[in-house]
Amino acid sequence: MKYFKKEKVYPNEAFIQEAIENYFSNEGFEIQKDGQIDLIAEKNDEKWIIEAKGMTSQITVDFNTCIGQLVKNMESSTWNYAIAIPYEDKYKVQCMKLPDYFRNNNNLYIIIVNENAQIKVITPTNNVEDTWK
Image 1 (cartoon, rainbow, N blue to C red):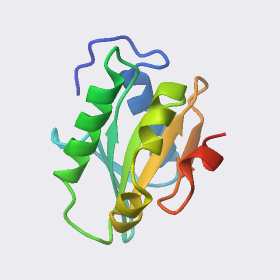
Image 2 (image 1 turned 135 degrees about the horizontal axis):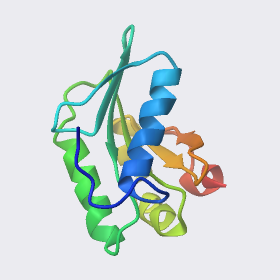
Image 3 (image 1 turned 180 degrees about the vertical axis):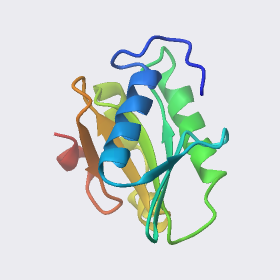
Image 4 (image 1 turned 60 degrees about the vertical axis):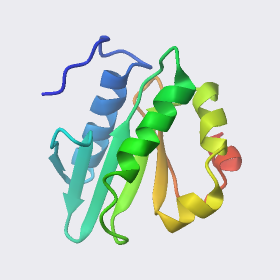
């Protein structure tokens, strides 16, 4: 089990991690953790590689680290890749800096988690600002 520095409350990473695990498990996905990536979810021919982050004092650095960790694990154009983050304006700003070209070409989803552990998935072709609401 992954060690988290902060307790499992919103908007900490442990909360985000648990929310996405529950979401994908409830959708019928088999959940895996391999130490390299926060969550691998598989069902039939569908595979998700997900990196989670919580609220920190250095959003830009941690967001960029999250993207870098995900990019290093991109092995197939048929897999879905995602970052899972809290529903916070500071993360919205970071997400809006991701070029549409990059998100589209790398099948990169953005999963936002609110304080009630509800999930909203922004697809690679959705506009971040419009869909964030």
